[in-house]
Image (cartoon, rainbow, N blue to C red; front, side, top):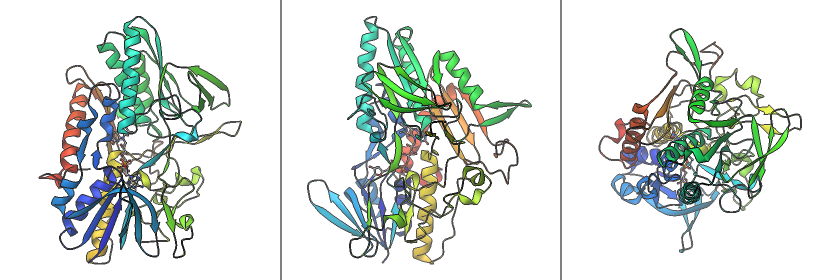
Length: 476
Ligand SMILES: Cc1cc2nc3c(=O)[nH]c(=O)nc-3n(C[C@H](O)[C@H](O)[C@H](O)COP(=O)(O)OP(=O)(O)OC[C@H]3O[C@@H](n4cnc5c(N)ncnc54)[C@H](O)[C@@H]3O)c2cc1C
């Protein structure tokens, strides 16, 4: 009997758990270890953060799903992986520790939110809000509604939304938040009392950490920069890109821009995405020695079958530098999926200021990308258990992604930007244009239909990730 352990039940781990449970659950031991007892549908926290959706609507309990799929659930926090013993040590809430043995391990722990990486950042020890966890989104909502109440009394308030570290990623989530804040303030009749500023480490508006998107329309090239510039103009949102946030005080954000100029921006409310690092997880050898250098990149993410260390100019010429099977070379029994795997470098052009500050948007790994990687890894583990030979693989230079960015949740006057992008990471060998992408497939649209799609996606994804009938036919 094979033993497969999955740490983390987000988009990547949950997708992997369903495929593994379905294929092997009856005869083999599949175990999911997750800190929370519920699955969290992260994308809808954008709406939680403005009070348009209760957080409970973004959650469902994991155990009943696993019971149907023959998957064992351990509710707790994995703290250590004993690589020689092939066992994961788990701290269970209030009931001590336990160990989970494995033949194959999938690390799908998502990001550690590195608020400590920027002084004064974050809702717990700092001055900014976050929508990156359910409790953070609830807290952001409460702070936001306080601002609304002040504006209703006639006060003018300043909102700054974007990225909170020069190396942050996930600009898409912050973009959704600022546009939803705009729409919500309009709905509440206080938009004229608010100044909204987009502050980000992107090279240009609409970069989103993927080097932007270009599409051909009626013989013309339209870029995501044109697109987002037009949206911000229509919504009256100011913007400052090419800027790395260095620190916050109670009411001021200190920053440095691409040219090395330093400055400060005042705020009443800010929501800034922190840098993402790997979750703290110790990897130890047979005498308890630290072997994490074999497994983790310096940012704490799991090293896989990528080519690391290439300068950016080389990396963009080598699509095969991006991993295909997400397997750790030193320990082939360990895989990583979703945000937990270490990419070989950025997708957007990195920049270093004259002062030596690296301002480089890290590559985003969205829910869809995380789910696809979860599936690829699960199918390969199934192969290994059944035949010993892996037959699946998909690099981010071969991967298609659809992204629907909510710009107002209302099904009557809401909107969303629908962005289809192929491949996610440009491949200049197959697509020798400036973008390195298939300009026929890559596409951008905006409109009310997108708001309906965004809502439908939550329903269909929650259906899929609950493993309900037809789950396999709903693509990641
Ligand atoms: C506000 C917001 C909006 C977003 N909107 C979109 C969107 O519209 N579309 C899109 O495609 N993507 C979106 N994303 C990105 C998407 O949410 C992520 O790509 C996705 O959640 C990554 O999945 P994951 O499985 O890698 O990690 P996660 O979703 O972070 O899941 C990791 C899981 O592992 C658990 N875990 C971590 N450490 C341990 C441990 N030591 N022991 C046990 N369990 C552990 C965590 O509790 C968590 O349940 C958004 C992100 C944010 C923050």
